[in-house]
Image (cartoon, rainbow, N blue to C red; front, side, top):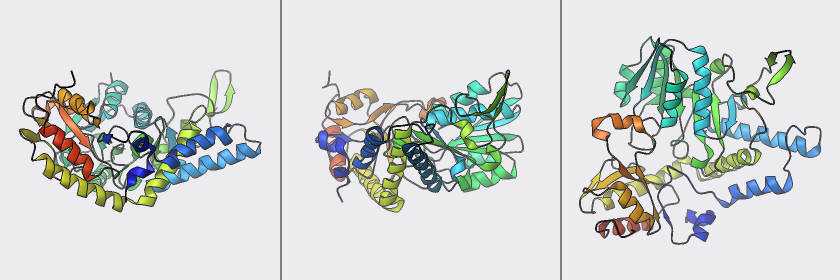
Length: 388
């Protein structure tokens, strides 16, 4: 099937070769229509509860929460809507910092900055906190012990392929009383993500064919009941007496202010869109494309591929040419890739990874023609400065 026909970006940009899906995915017609419907037909707040439209909006919001919950094997009350992965991680990490004052925080070197910097900032000054860093699955497992309080990693990274076994990690974490935080931003569009093998899930709608500015934070019950919000505002308070206030006793205390209704409803529609295609079908298409990409890239002179065969995110460099020059050359040919370190600065502390790369990231809507186009351009790029 030609999946591109489901996405208007390809209609209005007929020559585009889009291979930067780890940064942002395109939106299908039905997701865009869902946002338009909200603004055109029922654009009111759930706070306007005593009305026909208010009741309808509240119902749609609960349905959206259920769809997200079903996606990650949780219950609706575990789901907090946010602006995306970065906000989700900032929220959970700031709340964890309120209840943890000692012990070890185990981070993957491959973590995105949004899954490292908030830890450094929120736990700054806590002398009894120690940060521990790990590379691969074996290294991470070996560093989990009775002092480990939090383990934060990405089920799938936006850079180097790292196969973490979350079932193994979660089992050892529970044996040692540690909390597992799963940054699922990259995994959510490609593979099953589940609250059964972690305590916290964070992801963004824009990585799953949904809108920007929308996402979710999913927290397990035993953790949710001991956390208190670190953001305050409308919708949280049960009572206020002088300067003392009491919070409502439900998960909505983490959602302050007026929600991004359009973004939430579009996220729901994006998940339903993805479910219709099915993860197995997506994996079949993307794996086939990934193998084809790896094979074709090997024909490019002086290329050094840093990723494994079959990886859906492929990093490479060509000779001594700047990765930024290569990406700019391609971009001016209407081929969209990424260059740099991809907001994962911790991994650059490791000597073998202390460089920048060109990144190709695949989606099920890509095809062999996309790959053939980029490979031919790379073969004929010369010094990759034609765009200047």
